[in-house]
Image (cartoon, rainbow over all chains, first blue to last red; front, side, top):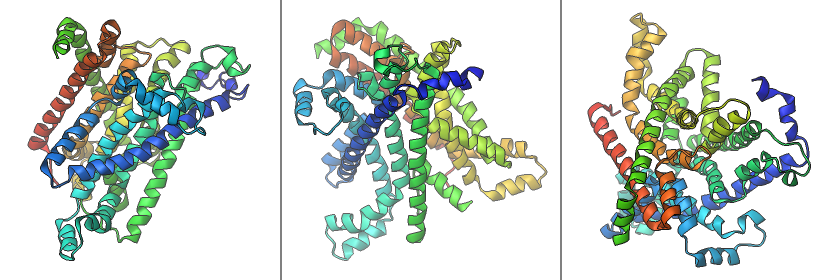
Amino acid sequence: MGYLFDPQNWEWLTTGNNLRFLLEGFLVNLQIAAIAIVFSLIFGLLLALARLARLRPLSIATGVWIDIWRNLPLIFIILYLALALPAPWKDFYESNVPGFFPEALQSGRVFAGILALVLYNSAVIAEIMRAGILSLDRGQREAAASLGLTYPQQLRYVILPQGLRRMVPATVSQLITLNKDTTLVSIIAIQEVMRHGRILTSGFEVFTGGGVEAPLLQVFIFIGALFVVTNYTLSRLSRRLEIRERKRTGGTAGPVIGLEDQTALAVETR
Amino acid sequence: MAELWEVLSEHFPEFSTGFWVTVRLVAISFVIAMIVGTAVAALRIAPLKPLNWIGGLYVELFRNTPLLVLLFISFAGLRRAGLAVDAWVAGPASLGLYTAAYVAEALRSGVFAVGKGQIDAALSLGLDYPRTMRYVILPQAFRTVIPHLGSLIIAMIKNSAIVGVSLLALPDLLHQARLVNSRTFATHEAFFWAAAGYLVLTLLATVAVRRLEARYAIHR
């Protein structure tokens, strides 16, 4: 304990540009997370719809696809894609990546990392969304159909707004997991916060801009704190939005699936 | 196709070691997660504010920190600080303590599902708080959350791969697949067999949980 809180061991935080260096790394994580979140939500919804399609072969094939990707370790997918992704794909990414992206995101390896995050998370999110849609009462769909709405209209105006709203808490907790999982791309040598932390503690002064060498324990506790603050803020924000939304829509939640949702409800009804 | 079988038969010992290291890692971590998770859940629902607060702090800290960061802290961090921790201690401890936060949340939701009437009944029968917990609430809470615990075990199987690629370098399934890959350059084959190993484990866990659920679960 004495070692942990010894001011001398926290001196690195204020010397040189150590703090800035770590935050720059953390920004790369947040950017990777943001890109992966957008694509995971889009593909997750498409997969959920394909899974629920009335066309049997499509539904079965999508089910197999989802079950394979969500049951493999994410780090496995990242490593495999980094090794096995065809070079032309990486070249395509490198020559088309927007110029305003930071240097750490310019490499073709980043494409492998983001693709792995999207493959895994879109499969998980597809299952969450499917559960949300299936939890709706059949009557909703039948009423919409008997009002003469076409299938796309039923989805757009009746099923998706209710089904997806119900799954917001479960989706948010998956997105928080995604945010944590961005640290895994450090394994394929993408320069994000974990890599920056290791550089700070490696003792090479060239990187630290003349600061003191940073103790490993404190640096990684600090990195952990960055994630805790970000993720905690995210989950509070979504909880508040959800409670407001529930008040607005009358608070009839129906059957809920997903841990976050259950606890949220339990807390509310306590 | 022929090469697929060749890689497996020639490197079976490596894959086999990896498979059992993963199984052992998950088993030890699961025991830790259940014990710590139950304790934290008990803190969170205890009738004393400071205890609730400590339980809540545990959950928020461990649930929001990346597992890779926990592994760095518990292995390399403590080592640099002069406390040499074995990889087989740091690995299961990190994975176990990380998952314990989720176990605690699952159990807490299970406890809320038990219902206030049961607690009032137990207390009015003269049971004290620990006994009410032990004989009335927790047995039912565990049975309600069997499906949740099942998905946590599957998450654990997947997260255990992070331990193998981190600094700890425990020879788990993914670690061994990378080893075979570096020796043979048969990337697709080596990763195929590791994927098969992980899918078998997650499938077995799914089936086992479904059995338990059919036998014990309480549908509310």
